[in-house]
Structure formats: C-alpha cells, structure tokens
Length: 483
Image (cartoon, rainbow, N blue to C red; front, side, top):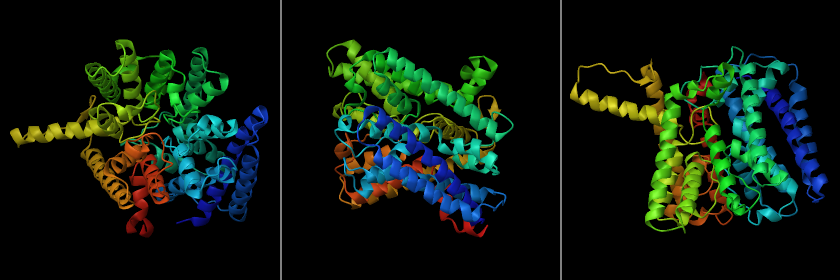
C-alpha cells in the first residue's frame, strides 16, 4: 500500500477543496451578513494542512492499484467531510457543537439533506449558500471532478472512478479516456444547473434562492434556504419545475450524454432502467393521489395532485424536499414513501438508494427462480434489455442487497440502543443510508433534538449510503490489507 502517494493526493484534494470556501466569503461581502470570517479561517486552515500533507510527499509517483483507489475514495469523503465542517465549527451564530457541525457538513456533501438547524431563513446568506454548494459538489461526486483534475497532476483516475461510480456495471465509459468522461459529466451537470436556475427565477424565485435551490435540486440533495423548504414559495409552478429537474437528475447521466451526442431521444426509451424508473414514479404518484383524495386531506383535486406529485417524486428520488408535512398523512403513505427511497434513482445519477437497476435485477432473478421451480432443467438467462447478463453481476447484486440490509439493521439497532423509539430509528436509518433526509417521528422536520451519539451513527450511515456500502466495507476485510 503506497501510503505516501495517498497522503500526497489527499493533500492536493484538500488544497483544491479549500477553494470552495471562497464563494461563501464573497456572498458574505455582497450581502454584508457578517458571516465571512469563518470561511476565510477555514480556507487558510485547509490550505495549510493540505500543503503540509502534500509538500513532503510531492516527489512520490507510485502507480495506483484498485486497493489504493478504494482507500483514497473513502478517505476522500471522510477527510473532505471533516474539512467541510470547519466553517460551521468556527461560526459564532448559530453556535454548533462538533457533532452538529460534522453531521450538517456530511449531510450536505453526501446529498442527504438531513439538517440539525432550525430558523434557517435567519442564518447568514453565506452559510445558506455554503450548505447548498456542498450538496451541489457532492451530488455529482466530487471524486468525478477530481478524476478530471488528477491526470493533470500525474495521477491516473480509473481506479477512483470505479470505486465512486454508482451501479452494478462499472466498466462502461462514455468516452475512451476517463478524464474526458468526467469532464462530459460535469458539462451536463453544469448545464442542468443553469437551466434549473433560470426556470426557478422565471417562476418567481429571486436570484439567490433560484441558484441555491438549483444546486440542491440537480444534486437531489434537499437542502433549502427556508424551514418550510419548497412549501415556503406556495407555488404549483415551482413545485412542477422541481419535479421535472429531479426526474432528469435521477436518470443515468450516461443516457443524457448519449442523447446529447447522438441527438436522439430514443436512447431513453431503449433503456430498461429508465422505463422501470418512470413506472415506479408514476405508480407512487397515483397511489398518493388516490389515498389523499379518498381521505379528503386537501381542499380540491388540483392541490391534491400537486402535493401527491411533488412528495412522491421528492421522496422517491431521495431528494427530500417538502411542501407539506408528509409524516402527518395517513400512515400508509409515509411508510410507502420511505420504502420507495430504498429504490432511489437510476445508477449513474445523483440519486441515492440501492438504485433502480439493482432492484430490477433482483426482481428478474426472483422470476427466474420461480420459472426454475416449474422447469428445473431449463436454462434461463437474465436480460437487461437485449443484453444477457453474466451470473457474476447478479451475484454481486445479491451480495450488495445482503450487505445493505445488514448495515441497515446494525445501524437501526444501534440507534435504538441510544434510546430512540422504533419509528424514529427505522426512518432515520432509512433516510440517512438512502441519502434521503427527512424521516418520521422525532426526525420528521429536523435532527437537532436527537443525541450526539445518534448523530455520529447517522453520519456513518450517510457515508455508507454515498459510497454504496461495498466501497467502505471492503476496508474492513483482512484480504484488503494483505493483498
């Protein structure tokens, strides 16, 4: 294991990450909110630590293997999440504890959207901007940005990309060179953000809110600049724009690239995961609308459809935006929506959860086993579209599902061990492991009231969810360190 090379790379990344402290400081100057000093201090501290890690190891040129790639990815998220918490620690108002600051920073960077803050609209504009910016950077996976930058620093990026990219089939690249792949992903990501900003502004948001909410929408994050989230604007048009961009962001970004490069929208229709994803979202909306209508929760059909569409897509894609307190709906719906977040978005998207393609493959495998019961000697293959998948892919999906369930149960039981009630423990674990955000019970609106121990556990759950379980679990195997 080439530890000195890894330390050098982490030093470079911390120095690069320190640049993200500059925009909030500029926002503080523009709005004169008095919140700029913590960001300047965090910038100086990050640069100093980054250079201390990089400079003594600057001549290390070892080739990265897959093992080093996994370790760098995990350390990358842990180290940058820690440095991201520095401005929040340095803040005078609100005065956050270490657990609160780390929880908020990791929630932003992993695009979970769970918050310990209340009275959000009264915070300095610089702090509001910083929270949204963290989600925007984390949404695409800052690793992908690093993959585009690292080749210029003399470090190959394929190992990092394989460890970070969501989904069961990680060897497919959009362009021959991985740096080009990362750049194209970011071109699409930035273009979507600009389009979302303009749409929000045209629908009535001011420029600050439009930019901030576009960051968390395209990242499928869920942070807002108001306690009431999207409900603050009370606008069906803004809700609809949010739904459209959440669906776009929850689709595999390689599909967007293929559609743009070939100028052919049939790429989407031919993709089986995309069709399953749309079917799931449509089914959730129909169920929510039917239950809300039959219980006369809202005054008329239009409002019912608006709420059903927004909350179903927001929770189903793991964004976690809110227009109303969905935990107050008939209990069947909140539980259904929490479970829908386990599916989440498509592989290669900014969504959380297990990803649609994995759940679809589990379904196909279940059908195959039923067919084998009827015809034991027949040979059945699992096809994704027209492509037959090798059994090792299906086995990997089963392994992932087992690990996901195991991690979920352990964290939920640990939370209950801290004194949390069962509904809160279940929903908080689901919300953080699926990178969703809002839960039920004591965490329906915010996480400020739970214990510090619970916050540390949920921070770990966020990292597990963002790194898709295996990338983090592999570090705990003896084989990894012996190999």
